[in-house]
Length: 186
Image 1 (cartoon, helix red, strand yellow):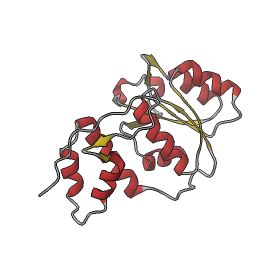
Image 2 (cartoon, one colour; image 1 turned 135 degrees about the horizontal axis):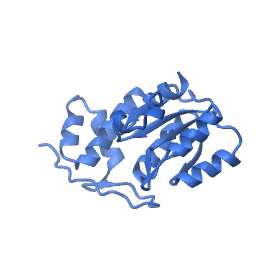
Image 3 (tube, one colour; image 1 turned 180 degrees about the vertical axis):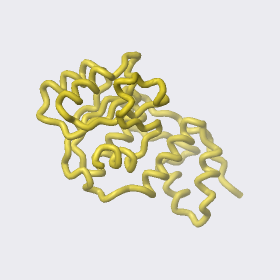
Image 4 (cartoon, one colour; image 1 turned 135 degrees about the vertical axis):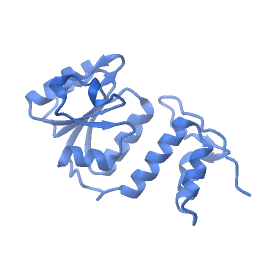
């Protein structure tokens, strides 16, 4: 009989403790399911988790299956502007695994602008559009002035982005490392 999995507990910011699912670390449960013989196990696992956890699980499986060459960024400096703890933790990990040097992550517009001014040159950036209630377009402008490639990673629809940024690369959350690589390197 199939093990019933309870909804995942979301770790608190700053916590190093993984989410627990039925006395099993969420990452291990997902890895066990991903490597099992039935391709439908991932869907079964997702159906037993909360919606947010299911979206994360989908992202996890896609990232594992689509993970590119581990040094594809080759030390490129990528600024990250994101205020959601769970998203930023995965994003930073994925970028580092793909060979990027992460600048930040920053959870405020002012922090990101300060880093752009003070840091040595950047090779790219990933920007959440809405950061703590403020829009990240000043950061996008500062990056554009320096000819730094950037991508918006957002829940906003393209139609909600001001016309000045309609040519910008926009990825819908949840974002995947393969899509980020495609947007920043090609």
